[in-house]
Image (cartoon, rainbow, N blue to C red; front, side, top):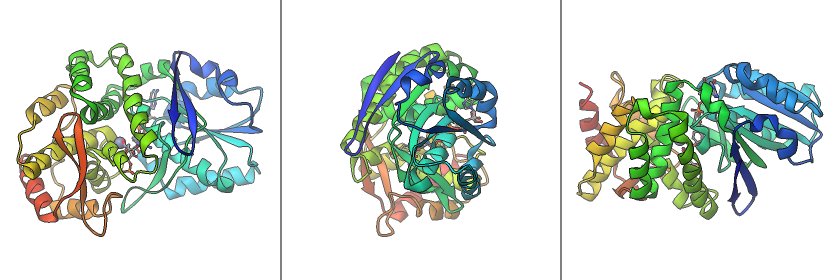
Length: 358
Ligand SMILES: NC(=O)c1ccc[n+]([C@@H]2O[C@H](COP(=O)([O-])OP(=O)(O)OC[C@H]3O[C@@H](n4cnc5c(N)ncnc54)[C@H](O)[C@@H]3O)[C@@H](O)[C@H]2O)c1
Ligand SMILES: O=C(O)C(=O)C[C@@H](O)[C@H](O)[C@H](O)COP(=O)(O)O
Ligand SMILES: [Zn+2]
């Protein structure tokens, strides 16, 4: 088992990574809770729900199952969970356990942050993408106007990442999580980017064994940023590389039609085009884009989406300041910065980018 410590101004907590950790919960979870409230989705629950419930059998434990997919990050599902917890009269020493991917982690984290003004919270990530979502304390649900618009910063007291669970993940979900790993490499260094690309050049090579060594590296990049800027007042915005357009596409296209990482993949290619135009310098767009394609990830805005609607969605991005759009731009691989970009400039580059679909 590997152990990393996430250090921030408001919280320090361990991330445990290794095979079979779902059977070692009693040993890994701090001994301070009166009961456990596991939140999972129907797909993850089918594979791992009973095992995790059993591993906590020495405690008073409940399990709540939501339907798998992005739509679970909704006000309705959030409310239903709170109703259930209140009916069970769960007290302040309750610990919410998020067993699942980023959807369950974000939803359960927001429940934990707000139920009785905050109860215990443990992340048990089960997707590759969740190497990102389980660390750093961003928890949220979606609004019809945009992604993650209602949320909090609320850290788990531990992240218990059982690497065996990745074996049941579909290829599409592996790809989606891999896109966030690529994001971490692009904002970090040429060295990380080149190593990742060499180890996993295409979809066939995207096996759990090949990916495994890089999960810790992705978490290291995220932890390094979050420890400097927990509440996203500066450098943490870099973790949003590819997300301004990515989030706009997710909400405009309809939550769940594209996986989060797929939308981010498109957003990263666009961010590189916008950076080329903004800085008037050449970037290795073809290299990144052809790698994404070889992995089976999309690189273009889905056909049928309207540019005005996408621009409107981007105005609801959380990086927006005084009505101006802010983008994470790339100067070169390993060097990004967050800049205000004029709407006309975004529109011109986006229009050319979207014409590629036609
Ligand atoms: N909080 C953050 O910092 C942060 C970071 C990145 C992404 N996110 C959010 O995370 C969400 C996406 O997370 P995700 O990609 O993990 O999606 P997800 O949680 O919907 O999981 C993807 C699919 O895989 C299934 N699944 C999960 N684990 C499985 C397993 N081990 N075996 C088989 N099937 C499994 C799920 O049931 C679901 O159908 C988005 O809402 C995104 O906004 C949050
Ligand atoms: O942790 C962060 O900070 C991130 O931006 C990580 C992103 O991958 C993630 O999708 C996050 O939820 C986006 O945050 P948001 O504040 O733009 O909703
Ligand atoms: Zn993301």
